Image (cartoon, rainbow, N blue to C red; front, side, top):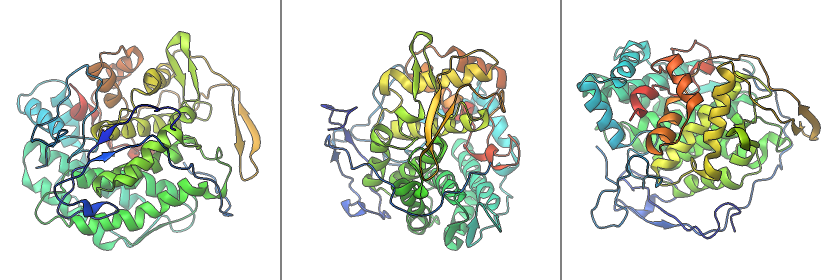
Length: 446
């Protein structure tokens, strides 16, 4: 029985579509119910002999009762959504809110919109550069062409969804079709797993916004996600590149889990979605919630992130990935945000507080390194990259404070300090500035 979810059987629905592929596509266009039992899947174990390499820096409405009703949740309510499309980082309700607020010129949405339209990747004249083989890590690296094109597709799709400008819709479709026609392999050193994870979840999110557009090759895109991205996700979760289960930092698991979850929803494969959820609760690697957030400092209402002793850039990356996973899960009916009295809320407060220049407690972190699980430890929080700005805060704040009415003072201060969130291209040109899709002021403010 699941150690965290005993006696709590839940229902989730992923709406099936006409062009669905993947493990449960045969459920048909009418959709299906999955009643989840309480037995978790067997945790993955390391079984591979590979040597680990060091890391380089218009949609269906949810219908929970099957009787034609539309599911809703109101501000402050702790019940997550019930699935459907669009159903990854943004629901139709979210998109309608953005369009309404921007049309009315209301703050802070209009400031978020201005960040989006000012970004060069959001322009309808973007030129895609699809390539058959994407390499991250080692010789011949070319992976920036992929992440820049995916951000351009997402930003153009978002502009269309908010403004109705079909030039942006057509550009997003053009970019995504070009990649699904061309890409055959993601490779490189161990960093290939990062590429498959980060760009897998981003590809699915961009495509989710145009999945019903005439001319979008949805079946071919689903095949690309299932046959190019997911096998690397699966390989990493199964054996962690032959290393000790604690060798890889939390962001490696988290980007992989984000990809598995997003592909599960986009491809309407309930098994993939459930695999990611089960791992978040019960996995042995550093992406599981208890391991990604290993220490709760109860008196302070804070919780230490697994990468806090490493550097703040990767700590922010992991925080953004946790936010991405929690939001996608919420929109499919799973409340990871609420786990352990908001363990992630306490983590976000911790990370924000330290990066605002304030003191936080730190518990010595110990782990096993490499293939032999050699003991290592960190005794102090890292000051490296302290104060770095990444677009990770708005979705966290607007869930906990907006939906839940929970006080998030440090995250609120971080948002006030940083202003309206931008996205890929607004936070430097290296890959770290593209690890999250961003624009949370526009997309998540309530």
